[in-house]
Length: 105
Image (cartoon, rainbow, N blue to C red; front, side, top):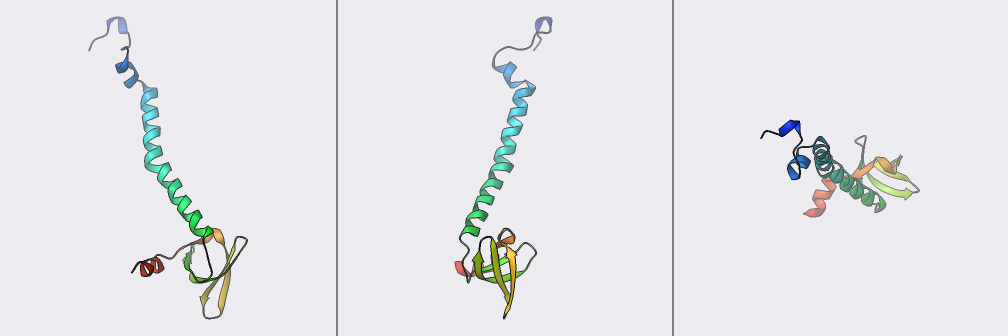
């Protein structure tokens, strides 16, 4: 396609070829492929942390497996061995994948 006097294409072809449109498309793809799934995952983790109850088996971000003894204002007391309890912040507690698989059986 040859344009007279170097004029830009008009109409839909002009919009689709513009750098601004391409930038918007890239941002939209990034949102749907990266940001949206991450927000969904974070919401699931937050819901799990709100539902923590004594007796649940969990794992910390440091890799310590334990059973919840009590939950108090952002602090979780974990029993990691018989009569061995540790206090950890609730933000480092995640679901124990092994315990989740056993519940599903």
